[in-house]
Image (cartoon, rainbow over all chains, first blue to last red; front, side, top):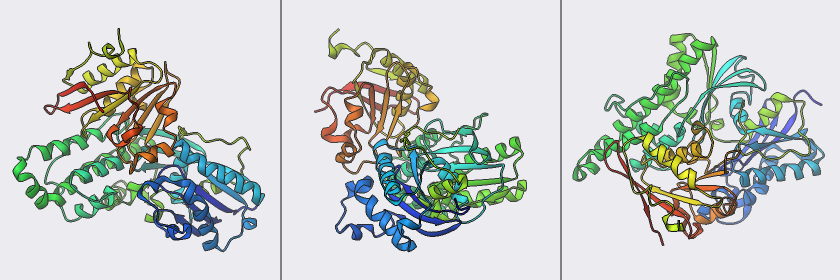
Amino acid sequence: MPASPVLLGIETSCDDTAAAVLDGTTLRSNVVSSQHDVHADYGGIVPELASRNHERYIGPVVQHALDEADCAPGDLDGVAVTCGPGLPGALLVGLSFAKSFGYAARCPVVGVNHLEGHLYSTHITGQGPPMPYLSLIVSGGHTQLVHVSDIGSYTVLGQTRDDAAGEAFDKVAQMLDLDYPGGPAVDRRAQQGDPTFHDFPRSRFDDLSFSFSGLKTSVLYFLRDIPEGERDAFVEAHRADICASFQQAVVDVLVDAVRRAALDTGVEHVAVVGGVSANRGLRDALQMLGTEQDLHIHLPDPQFCMDNAAMIAASARMHWPTTSPLTLDINPRLTLA
Amino acid sequence: MTESDRWTDLLPLQSTSPEATHALGEQLAERVQPGDVIALHGDLGAGKTHLVKGIGAGLGYNPADIRSPTFTLVHVHEGGRLPLYHIDAYRLGDPAELYEMGADTYLYGEGVCCIEWPSRMGELLPDTALHLQLTHETRTTRRIRQTCHD
């Protein structure tokens, strides 16, 4: 088997259908259904309810990825597919497609843990941080701090007890009448706001776990405490300040956990991955922590923060040469350790 | 005890802390049966996920493993007294989306199905569901009562 394989990545664990062709560390295509004009490929207008309609998207998305990479099925050394964690029905679409495709293209199929995919979103087009290192996976569905000691050897140091950080962003965005997805909308406003405008609570646990449910509720109460007649005008005048204050609370909690975990484990390298790793407030605060604590901070290219298939292919490449048995099945509750 | 009386001695409840909401969940868990659907109505921060943590604890799951399924839509917990299906319909564009995802496996399954933001499920919600309304009273108190839904 080649040392730098040509891999087709397929990801269908949640909202987006994604496919990518990764040739060693050269990314030849990276297609995500919500960002690409696959609707036109499919030949029709796709209604809103189809946002998780993987059956409809998978064919066009994979074709698009192969075409853009100028790659024929016979050029592939393997197919990497997310087998968990995620929605059972959604995962099944990707896995069934990958198995059929691999059988027809006569190449091995590799099952990939979605969370491990996120871990290697810093390794898609290069070496990534040297091991051991810490990785903070922070997205709409996940918030966990992981010690990566070797490929396949992970320790979850802490994770959220209730809401994921990205979920708190979305729910606060909704309270402030901002667009969905809420993370980028809050981040944009926060750039113009005063982070000291209001002191929202930061939850802190000795064991490095996280909680963002209380923070979400405290923003709700902060808004409810404003007399009803004045509320709209107040939010209009201070939306950026509320965004900045809320974002600062989330960032403080995340950065504090990274700082403590780095001290505990003695690592010199820290990666932050997942959708919320695109947040500018978080990126800036981590760079500052890196300078203060002499830590190397590794942030994925923004296009690899959200769910994508390039990271799924990269994860399979990290384990290469490898193959999964024909009995490979989905595991909706797959964890890292 | 008739079906409509199954919960009446527990509800309504004025919960004065997250711990009290959790304890109610544990009490509900003692009485749930395979196929029960519990629809949890209430605003953001009213304690819906917290109540599910209590139900999960009562069924033998670690409450720390019961997290909000807002993004992931469905969390399945197995290995306790009964399977626990934890659904969040908050992000659904259309009830049909949940149907396409195989929601009937959970709604008519062998376990207990707890649903946050159930109004977004429309017609998919079984008629036999237990509807609970969680309401903010003060910063620390919540009123939890059984309601009827058409």
